[in-house]
Length: 398
Image 1 (tube, rainbow, N blue to C red):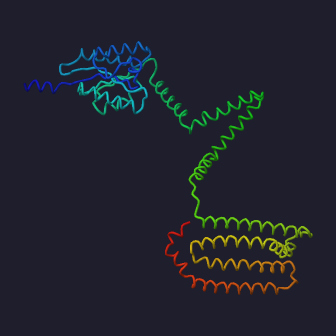
Image 2: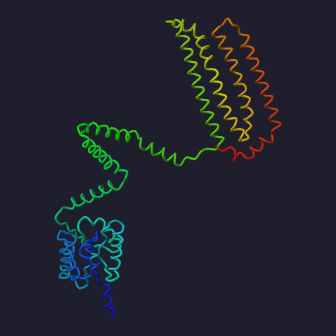
């Protein structure tokens, strides 16, 4: 009894396995897999060959039957052989591999093989071999290549994969299919209006446009701008007021500089322009005076508008910088009188500098008065500003 058990343990159960990964045996011959047994596999191979004589999987099944018959004839007493065919799915990919694994597990439950002789049709062995080898040892692999070489089949598979990617992936299809489609459409429209002779001009313009868009990243910039506008969230109202006043103030400054430059150029153009550096140096004070005379109002207004916007923001935030900003607005506003006196003195040096001295003294007094007012207001409104310092996380955002 012990001797019979020892002989049974030493027996090798070998299965000759044919794998149809793309599921042709089910879709073309309508045969349910796994197919186990010599007669069943031979009948299935004949049915598949009759349904499609050019099907390489039928030849692989015939090869599996031939290997099985040869092993049976040469077999040793301790070797038990079986033949089977399993299949995947016509959809390919993960679904086909999972179906192959499931049918392999079903086969091993019926016939617990200790090793496999794998028969595949050339190209599919790279995908099938790891699936089988991870569950049972593979002692041999037989590749059947019919009517074509393995390299041609692999090239065709790679080409079909890239072709599918070009059609399905919008990243490539818009250029590989979209641009030629536009050109064909333009050619059709030009043909209708008998203007097909200018098609090459249109072709060059379209091609250059596509190259410029891709070369300078215009499409990415437009896409990023669209995403930004879609996800944009407006800042707090106080920040909007401050930003708007800053832009308005900058525009006033630019316009003031332009008006001052235009006035100075007109004034110089009305007289004989000097031809040497000394001549230009002699009229430079007058040019500066004309420039200040026409630009000072808008420049002072621009600075005051920008400061006013920040003052409103700091008032809403209960920030103590509001007081210093208010004093600065007053001083900047009075600086217009100083600039006016300066421009008059530069244009007419003999007019006297008493007005300039007066405006400077008054400006200093206004600055001192502003400091005193800031000190008094800050002491009397300490509770107003202390409230924000305690809630800086809430009011300091932005």
